Image 1: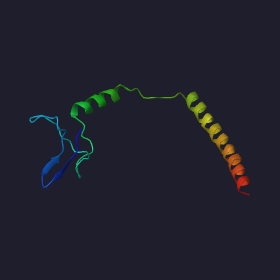
Image 2 (image 1 turned 30 degrees about the vertical axis):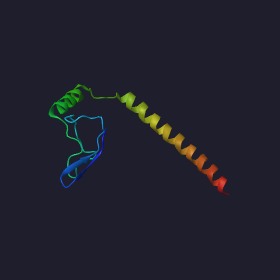
Image 3 (image 1 turned 90 degrees about the vertical axis):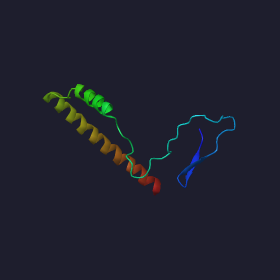
Image 4 (image 1 turned 120 degrees about the horizontal axis):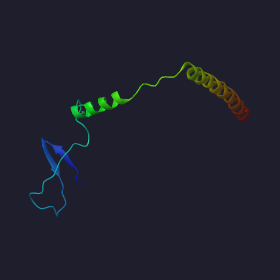
Length: 96
């Protein structure tokens, strides 16, 4: 890798001495120019992504699964509340 600077519309770079004249190089800015899109996605990539998304089947829960999930969430929330109370009391005692 080599680094360079644009000055007056020209690129100034220092290259290794062992690179012969006529060596082809690719030059890319290290940052996107201001106002340019950060990333442009090719139409083919968009089509592949949409096709993959179409293959995903929706997740549906039965009423029993939904009820069990809600009950588990409530239990988790209550457990977290009780742990918070215990931890906050421990912290309060540390500062006393």
